[in-house]
Image (cartoon, rainbow, N blue to C red; front, top):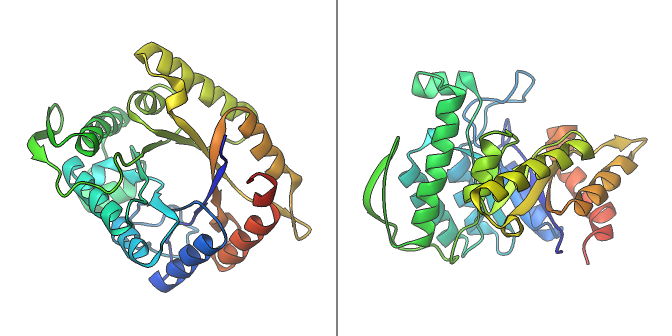
Length: 285
């Protein structure tokens, strides 16, 4: 099983120049993926500032990098019409010459929803939107023409020019056990979750596997991904970091996104450099 690592850096309070530096550094340091959040407001009151818009930032990265994969972790499906999101994703894949991972999620930021869209949908409405968007995107990225009619409606939608990748990977982000993991089982190529312990990760994976069984999906078709928050103790990475990665590998997880901003934005590039030098070589052949 190939082990891959990504840098995850929210663009809150950071200039494009700072984000560009981090992305280019991640590519040079040997990371496989660089992801950013999709928000218009800060995620929490302690955040350093307001963020850049996700997709235009990713398009900028796509034009200046050569190898590293790029994507949102994750793009809120209610923020853009699904067909528009599919067209944007296709365009970024073209700009990057086939390096996009399309991360989508149901969204959660109430203040952001109300500020930009005037209301905050219920959990059911957001999960319905995620499931329908995943279906529309999967069709757009695999077929020449798409027609779909439920909550969202598209008719004879032609997605040309096509993406560079034969099929852009759809990453379903979230840990909701009843709906989000079910949507991942049905329509995702990657299931990305955050877990506070190995035991929690094992439970999420077991639930995903059961959803796959119920819907007739081959569980092995889905890449498992999780976030890693570096812990530094006495100037060194805690052994818990490597132990968690090792344990998750045993559960079948193969993609780890490193949340470098967890230790402060000023040290993000330094943390991702040290992680690449000190942790990654133990797991990458």
